[in-house]
Image (cartoon, rainbow, N blue to C red):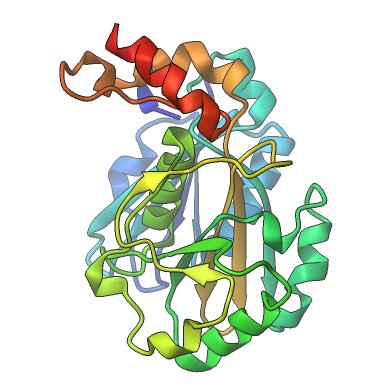
Length: 276
């Protein structure tokens, strides 16, 4: 959610993702009420964030990442428990449903079922980070039972920052669109992806719900020594609608009219309303 939504009395914790050689800048310790933690991976950061929020050490957690040892700041993400965000009327961009960290990608299907009964075929967009051919084959194999062309493949043209990918994915869910795959992120060996459930979106497009689906679900997959799989879904539009409209700067434009609908038949009626 946006930083201007934070209430003045909110207790904030900061979780910094950085290498061991990086030093946390002193300005992060600007308040005696601010807890500051340092971790090395996104898995550690999200696990710690959940612990901080559920034990009420803080009501809001700021995740920050630094690109290298010279502390070049990359991106920051604000996280809170869903019920807290609703109570405080925060504009919720997306919901983190769960986190899977495994050395064996074949265990991914079973682990996802533990997260709100989410199935691999429910995921309509996958943001892939640090891909290599050997791991790509394992990913495709793990998704072999999913319908063809079921999931759009995304990548991060700004480097290997997981938080940047998290922001990109959250915005895609918030605005109900599939982002285009940057040319720099197109896989070199396209034949590996043939006959799989994945497709490469060459341009941005509306993200329509398929019959039987109730919400859009995406995932971010980081490939290192292990597979870190972050499941993210769109927020309940009925809860966040008023805040979403107020926060959507595109509505101020005379030329751009963002619209959304639950299915294809309703998109036309929504378009007509925006033109009036």
